[in-house]
Image 1 (cartoon, rainbow, N blue to C red):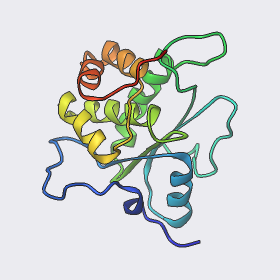
Image 2 (cartoon, rainbow, N blue to C red):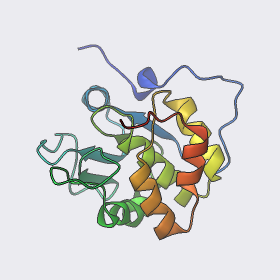
Image 3 (cartoon, one colour):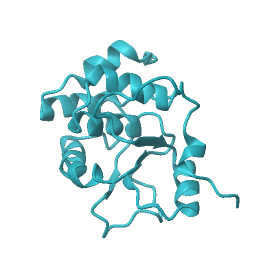
Image 4 (cartoon, helix red, strand yellow):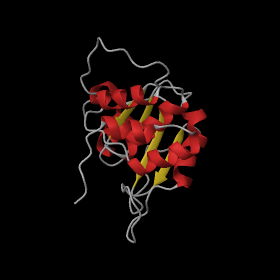
Length: 179
């Protein structure tokens, strides 16, 4: 297997663009990308790993590492009988772990596709680090063009942190309307 650094998976971004003040060094990845990075790197990344309830815990998650957090819920914006929706408990776990995770030089947020749950997590961490909400949403999109932050997670985070992440995301991200 060829070596893949986390830089390999970062979108080509405008090198002239400045990273917003207080925005952590976060990379948003899908599961396969995260495996490739962890298999080829000895770095001590901060990590938030989010999988669906029926999925296995990825082998690179270290339960003994205080900078690693594993969560299990579906990628849904509303409650339903067949889903485990993001809850206050899940978002509070991100908030509680943020202090340790943000100490890492580089942070990986991943879910299955690297689109919704991981990008919402990146926004929550950026907000806790002190980044402006609108600037953080723009930076997440700049870093992961396919990002569509999970709106339910953002609403819960807004209630817990007193932020406006949901409003910023809705005004800046093109979400498809459910039919």
